[in-house]
Amino acid sequence: MKLVPGPASMELANKVSSILGLRLMELEYKTFPDGESYFRYVSSVENEDVVIFQGTHPPQDKHLLQLCLLSSGAKDLGARSVVAVIPYLAYAKQDRRFKEGEVVSIDVVLNILKQSGVDKILTVNIHAPWIINRSPIPIENLDAVGTLTSYILQINLKNPIILAPGKKGEDMSAAAAKVLNADYGVIRTKRDVNTGAVEVSLEDINVNDRDVIVIDDMISTGGTMVKSVNTLKSAGARRIFVGCVHAVMINNADKKILSSGADAIVATDTVPNNYAFVSIAGLLAERLRKL
Ligand code: R5P
Image 1 (cartoon, rainbow, N blue to C red):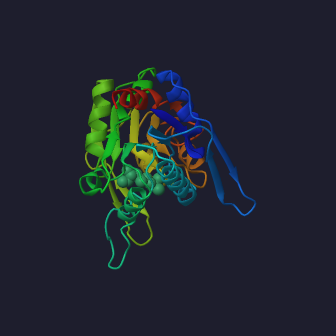
Image 2 (image 1 turned 90 degrees about the vertical axis):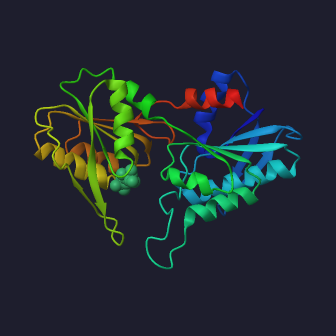
Image 3 (image 1 turned 180 degrees about the horizontal axis):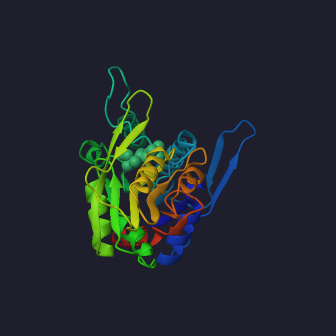
């Protein structure tokens, strides 16, 4: 197995290679003055099973095309198989036509990856797990919520409750609550398909004088989390800890969350970010070892 560090996920690739005790492949990479990417495999990939680490966090389109170049290039040079480790898989939010005439982006992206020679995708907390069944490429979806929550065990919590927003909220908060041996619940969300603005409600959950841990698969603009923190504060929450797997953090989302009253943010390193106190390298290494 040959591990290839794509430019978007070099640090993570390094961590996985140390855990596995396998050296990373040497890859020559540069950006031309006009912005185009150049790659050269310095040693042979002929007949090799190649594992390319390349997240598709912002700039999504650039990272995606780099992955296509690396995968297609490896196959062209005779690689036997390509596994793409995509810790954060972009475009999974457009998993259907919410409005007539919309392009179902994730289907297009998966088809492009297939055409580029990707034989298997290893990803983490995919935004829309239901697309796995219709994907033209086998997708393995690792769950980092347990790993993320283990970190929170270090905090001395008072009467904690774990909450998670949205459709996947119940599964996520239940998984986290198991680790923390705490209560859990769902923050109901309603998103406007035109503006993207989100409304949240706690329904009958009592958070008064309790420490609350809000877990989400991703924080993008921070809109959902800011609304959640504001609502929890108004409902009397004592301290609020925010945890997410994918800290995409667009437009100072982190600062908005902290200034709305969250006590701390904890994230994984699927996307390079300042709150990556938890690494998914162990999870990935364990899975790759079995391949
Ligand atoms: C929704 O399904 C997700 O779990 C997140 O809550 C959402 O993607 C966060 O987006 P934003 O940070 O832009 O509100």
